[in-house]
Length: 578
Image (cartoon, rainbow, N blue to C red; front, side, top):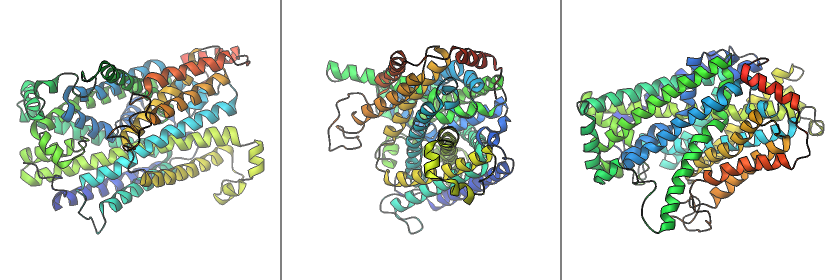
């Protein structure tokens, strides 16, 4: 029934429409970026969009920043292949926003200015804390960037039907993937360098609107196909899944009751570890945290999260219809033919093709809907990588350059004033110099991400995403929560929490079956895995809190009680907030 992608090539009409929509999307977003760039003149404009966005606008942007290609294509694919268990990712991603709403959003907006480190350094020694925060921010962002950009190359090649044995404009599949990575990298650098937070925010809002429209259209068409009979939809999905009634029950993918007692326990602990990383990692992701600074006050920050919860919640409910719809209308056999690795990424595109053919007038309608969904997936990638790049460049410029490097002995020894003279910022005020450094940092981070992504295409994307969430939950979140709520917390505690959580997460992931010791590992022929879980969150997150406590209790530093009282009043009331 479905020949799209299964044959290794998309028909010419679908490919032409997809490329045309890609180009239209790029032109529109670049136009918005240039428009926003003309309205970016101060550091507050560049880092926080002038704090001019409403709660609804910021909520849409948070949704655009958060709902990545993994959310759109990956979760729909997981549900299509694994049924009930595939929806667990959706639950984890959604519940995570309750943590952000209750513990982080309002307090962070009131306490900080541009970055996460503003909160951590408020009552502690600036340089060690800001350095640690910058290291963590860049580490999380780079891993997440690599996952998005490596995924972009593979995804666009898949959506355009560029498979082994075929060429595209004279390029091999590998060359086409590399070109996609370069284009995505160049666009994300442009969005950040030209538009700053204003440009990036509007790109994320556009992406969120496109994603919701696309998902809603496909959801309605799936429900119409089954006469709005959910039982019929689920029954057909179970029948065509090959798993029968087990498709609608827990245990098909996670918590599998097979093997020895140790293996069964490991499966269950892995599920718990994954849940912890998803739920707690979101509240520590740097590109999410800086979004709370783009609104004028704490009330707007709360509204942002409430709108984001509503938008993201509705979206993840729609992934149920997309996933089960793909299982019922496309079937596991056709998905496996199109994607032998069975990642699930083709489920939504194949469903779009099927629905278009069924409701929009044959193969032409299928090509149109497929092209639209492919363009939405591309927009999703662009919006997320732009947010990650902005978070990294902001931390490097505001934390490392402005508050650690400038005025230090290192600055006097390196004498990098020629860089500022070259860019026209030498002699300007501090804000202007900081913005120049931020733009240079975005350019450098973008180039590094492009180069690393080209050489990292064999890496397991799930490994990179898991590491990003685990590091965010293990290092950033303990430091932020301790700083906001623990009076005795010290500089040593903050640095120990960040570095301790980061290193624990990295070491455990390297020592896990994700990297070696299994057929799907990064190095399948090697076996140096001694940690049995695929996600380190169950160990590394408590370790981050433990290291924060340990560093504090063994430190001889006397906490500044007055500063904590000021932070407490500011975080809870907004008095004195920027």
